[in-house]
Image (tube, rainbow, N blue to C red; front, side, top):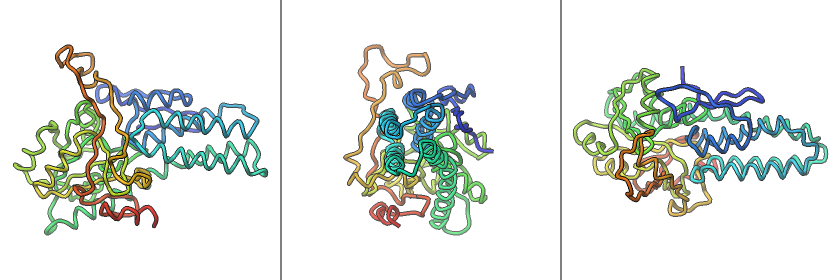
Length: 352
């Protein structure tokens, strides 16, 4: 059974506090938008799909408990609160796109004189709630298409060894996962020999979260430190790299967890296919290239400390971008819920 990072029943939202994993499993109650912003910003919930879902569900919870009786006021509140939620983690595009769609829905419902205040609220909340099931369905489709693409590259009927970076499983989505969903599909098809996951410094999402999920799912896996990727590809045959994405530009340039870019370069040198697994909501067609993706910078403490223990010299300066951008030219294929696309043909995926 997959791990459950988001627990939702109408009016009640709880998220698994990922800052405490793998040592402690504790759920945090999210009572409204302010709580939603905090758990996203503090990275108690993370992963672009999960950020969008939790942010929007926090608004649904708040609306349900609000007695607003004026449609125009409700529409204004919705727009302001959604824009506020987007500011919690600006690099991930999923929540921005979800916010835009929901604002458009609010505008439509507000303008329709046949829609009452109660119907406005009900239809708006139902639209948010549908995001949970759609995300799981999309992830399973990503898993199927990614599995097929990787196996089609093989000679014969052998098993594959996969390398992944950061966390892209049930903890980063509503369930199943994107890149980890591909790995899960390969495992279910009995075609997965082994997974190698990076620790993913400085926040250790690979060591704390991906490793935790792989052990939970009983998937054969080995943890490596980030600087071992070149040595791994030299010493042991790796059949494919599969990573997630926080934002994909129109030309296929992909922002993902820091360290992804260098893995793509190493994969290119060793002739290892490099795949990005991401739902269409991660693709931002308004950006012509990755140069225009805003990269979030995180606090120095994430580099200088592990927990409460300082590991860096006192007084040293730090540069801590949370993401880097992998050029589309280094990406073999982008795996979406509609299929696998070479980077320069993403428009076909978005508009099909």
